[in-house]
Image (cartoon, rainbow, N blue to C red):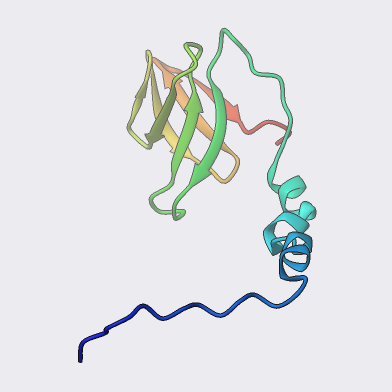
Length: 109
């Protein structure tokens, strides 16, 4: 079948643009989710900062903000400067340097 002329679109109903401007996306109205998922915390400039943990409990990874401002993804066995990640928990990671270990926790954890 060959189309010999273009079909003309139907006109929008009266007041369509005004009604469309009043529509608010559902995601924008759920402020409680945004507040629950966001934590304000000072960013230390001289130390790494744990900013997130993800993955399954058997294979968890973490996002760490380095003093340089770069973000590193680490998991058990990863090196973070002179430290080695020895565990990734629900709200923290355990770093070891030599015989000393220390915990890097999520802000407000």
